Amino acid sequence: MPFETNVPCVSSDFFSTIAEAVGLNLDDHRPLDGICLMPLSRQQTDERSRSIPFQFETQAALSGNQFKLLNNSAVRRLSSDNGAAEVAVWELYNLIKDSGETINIAAEQPKVLSSMQAERTAWQDSLRNTLAE
Image (cartoon, rainbow, N blue to C red; front, side, top):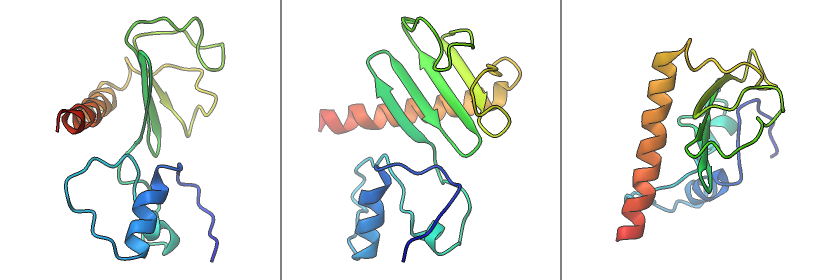
């Protein structure tokens, strides 16, 4: 049965969702970028349990329920995604209040910035650990 949600979802979520639907146990400590969407379809939650990670060359991003973190470690990007915001090493946007990502609120939200930076680091560490195995 199809369902609609306002919760951000990506194709990385399909693997975890299908695994749970067929009863496959994934408790083997492999890092999974996606989350199981079954609680959303059952209306047991209305938010992601963790952010959606992205990385391309020297740019990384986490997109969560409310905030999006961008890390431009080499600051090679010439303009922001919308062409209006100033490019910085760390950019933080409130996706609910500023869906066009025009106002970098990193300086105004140090706790959110720090929390999302830690989540990004943990995700990247999980990738490195997997490659080392």
